[in-house]
Image (cartoon, rainbow over all chains, first blue to last red; front, side, top):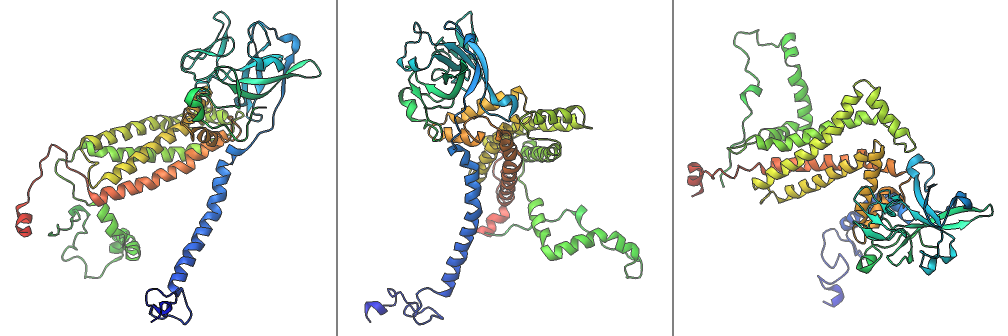
Length: 222
Length: 267
């Protein structure tokens, strides 16, 4: 018997002496039905599971358009102290979509980082870099203080105490034609105040921690 | 191995034999009426054979020394059933609308609906009761050694149920949509986000985007009332099946008793 007609090697069911085998058949009808039926089941399940899954995880990859919002005339702000402004991050959800930012004019005496020179205004986000509670600027202490877990930040938003892992986030600023200050997208900074794409609270941007938290694909720094 | 005799049906549940001298042997209309319940049950049982399963589930042998600690699992299940029933009725009034409707609907339930405050209170306090009972049940299982062979899988299912219960508490906390609910959820989502590598994606999934947005509340509501309760109900079914299949353990302070009859038959 040649290798082609070997009982165990041949691809033909007839050679392998399967009961009810046909001439020239390589797959039994039973096996064909099993594979076909299960394959059809897998396709049917995937056809509703994959779209549903994509629907649920889709927002992760969505990039939102940059939103610039006027927060008041240039006269409102000074280089020495912060003025709180309210801006809308998400429209249609009422108060839940709003946040507070602390804005002051760029001050060469205290703002030492070279990256800030193209923005005439500094806008510090009130979202604590620990777990996202709203920090408050306490004038007497000259500190941002978080009510939840005791995070403390200095005038530039750098952490000086408590659990936060990085400085407070900032917003891009620009001045429009009506001499109004506009606040744009959020960006995060590391302890050197270098800009990074926006991260969620609790995600460090220094040391080994910066590699453990990937940035969001849909939101990059300008 | 000799087979243990099948557990008997308690005598109170067995049908009494007909009294002698009653009637002429033919069933009267009164007999039919008296037997109506049995007839219906028989009709269903003849077509489903459910009674065998029900007997298998309910009339099990339990070890000597079984005590009140063994009721903690059932207590947890009843806490879940209470949450399910009150939750369904709360859902009839609740509106997952973040621009004010959610808070307003909760206020309406609490202040204006008949028994609304009571039913909402049952759901609110019952959630804490359920979490406490889950932990007591877990402690009982641990200290009685009931997680050991062959019950390891039931321990694993129980741990998944514990995690799902925590997820229920987390997602339910946002729904009143007051200041406490909002900020607790912000913090909770960000705690999830601190998990390395996958954390940021997890918090984006929970919020439905990079910020707390228009669909976050409905997402939490859907997870809270559709996704997780279904999973919990299914896993409770598996949990109970394994309890009935494997039986319960004797308390650890009870020594194993040798049955002389079984020993002789074994030899």
